[in-house]
Image (cartoon, rainbow over all chains, first blue to last red; front, top):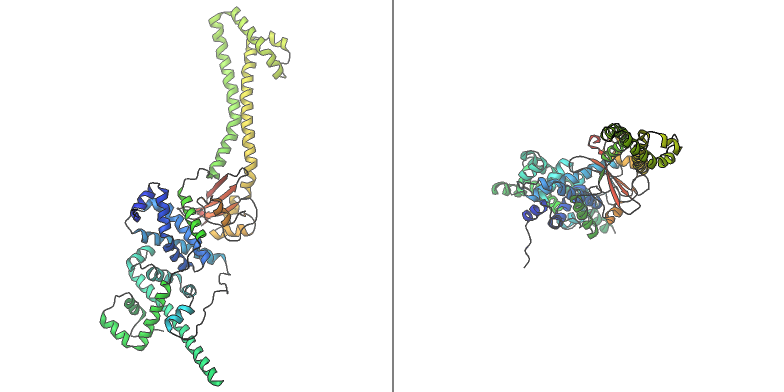
Length: 198
Length: 288
């Protein structure tokens, strides 16, 4: 029976020039890293660009990886930086970064709140409304499941700052969700009134 | 919307399981706070939502690009190194001919007195005459100044040897000229391209996007788009160009590699013989 090599074995082999191991390592972590990139940059094509840059950065820096941090944490840090780079590049590049095609919140009709919220809020749009300093810690916490210490290490800020930024980021998202559900409720009420008028 | 009694930091701590049961209970008992907490939880769920997967092609190409970055790229040439090499070739080629001429003259000056001292004058004359006879035709054919073979026969061994050495030097010189010509040909092929993307242009690119602007205004323009490069399997250490940049101009692909420390301008040139060279221009880290 073939056993799957763990990350450490793959990293060691990759550091010794074993391309097959490197490929397995990259393949194994691609989706996880892309998820971070996608949440940070928001759009598919940019997410793929950022992911590719992250993978390249990982490969180029793998030699320096000493195992002190977990590979997932280390690679999240790289992916986050790649995504931030991509995001800044995009923001500088284009004034037309807000495309109307999918750049607005869709307001859902009333219903079960969690379903309505899930269906009505484009998470990318919602995240884009968060300043970068709040968005990144929230993503690292709620998507990547990193603890405050890891996030602090990744972003090179104090754990207390991480805690505060996550709270503010979540608060902002709660505001957005609150607004959407509130508008949804009002629309629903208007809809009911409309029916009554008929 | 913030509840004065229960701020977002406390609610966030509850989400992360860092609040005690009593606090949780009191928040849940407060309608405003509990609604706020519910919204925050919804936000957490949203963020944790899985993202649509990359297409298999895009996934593969990203991994392939990273693997390519790991492989040593034998074709990678530093433009700076190439320029230096060319400069050395230019300088050394004429110098080699000059050195060969001096060396030949020096050899002659040493060899003739040595021959005289070893063999005596008559023998020297014979040797010199033989040498002159052997070389005079070549000397006449090759030298405008000593066109007459008889004159050459009458000349001393010095002339014969000198012509012989000069011929060697000439041969050396021709070889050098060929090298120079070859180098010039290379320059002719490379220099205009290099000049089209000169560092003064790059100096205006104070950011990564500055490069994009240079691409946009036509100063530098890649020929192939990202997909073509990925398909060609030559991504090397560069990142993909921006979407939609496909017009033709000096280099086939231009982009910045902002990883691995320095920021470098990467110029990929697709040669006619189907080989690919990646030209790594001057370190552009100062441009950032």
